[in-house]
Amino acid sequence: MTSSTVRPGARHILVAGGGIPGLALALALKQAHGPALAATLCDPALASGGSRQRGRAYAVAAGARRMLERLGVWERLTGAAQPIHDMAISDSRLADPVRPVFLTFGQDREGEDPFAHMVEAEPLVEALLAGAREAGLVLDARGVSGARPEGRAMRVTLSDGESLAASLVAASDGARSRLREAAGIGWVGRSYPQMGIVATIGHARDHEGRAYEHFLPGGPFAILPLT
Image 1 (spheres, rainbow, N blue to C red):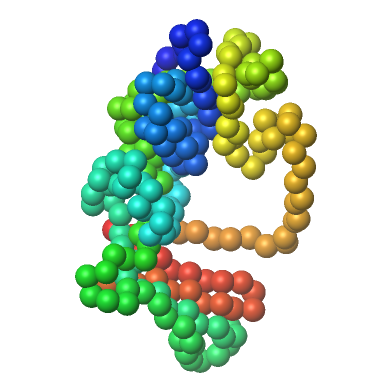
Image 2 (cartoon, rainbow, N blue to C red; image 1 turned 30 degrees about the vertical axis):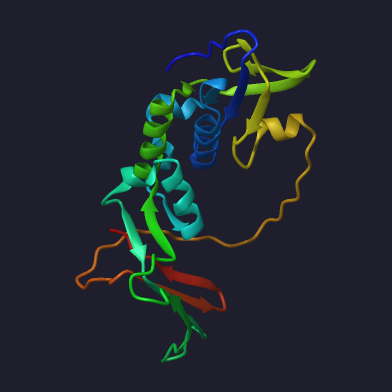
């Protein structure tokens, strides 16, 4: 990975956090402004190719899919995105012998785009990274340890002590964001005495792109289709 070098007087945005939100934001800004904007994305996970995303999957709604299409990312996911054609929802108790479906929704007309797709995280991150490299983003495998105003710009301190100047800093560094804390932005948390189990399973029959969600007294049980 390369460190940031920005020509004097250029507008420079630095995005802290190389997950899906940070990558999409940096790519969108770079594509919108072109050479007029220098963009750097910092995240230590870049050193391992974003492997911390392994095992996750996302439901990408139609609006988010259109954004990824506009960014040129969706076309890179050919074969990796499973359309959800419809969804069935039930609400019952665990001991009920029958779980009647009380709500379904999906494509209203034949030929209409699916309302969502399921995409595993790794190919989605790889597609965003490929788009970022092609657009000329600087991908820096260092973390951001702090940022403070300096005149009309921001002074950013990286994890190895180097400092950079940026016109704007975007904090996409997760739930325990250091930049949010440094900016004094408060938050409210609540602990739930619950656990979730997530698994990827193979089965004999075709899922036909259908998602199920059963609402039970102890919590929801969902089955979502992958490729």
